[in-house]
Amino acid sequence: MSKQKPVWFGMKLTREQKDMIKRLAAREGLSAKETVLRLVEDAMQQDAALDIPEDSVLDPVRHLVGSIKTGPRDLATNPRYLEGYGLGATLPLVSP
Image 1 (cartoon, rainbow, N blue to C red):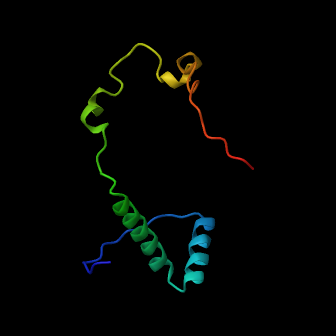
Image 2: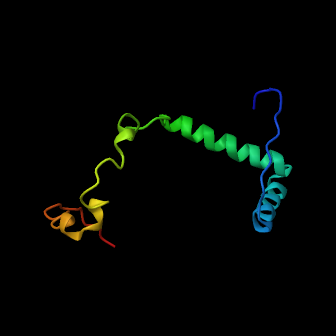
């Protein structure tokens, strides 16, 4: 973690969440704060390793979301749209 001027960040936890953090901290031999920071840093490194872009293909058309007022809200809610889906596809058989 880089050395920068710290800023306050607080959050409310349930008793169970706090206990889980404390158990993990004890197992790792770290403070609760160090444990949470390590988990956040690990998650960010995993994202960077996967090279996940921060924006998505939805961003350029986000302004269109919800602009069509007629039709089904989600095509996947109508089984008719899924008729025949996957038919003809062959999957390799795995022997036990």
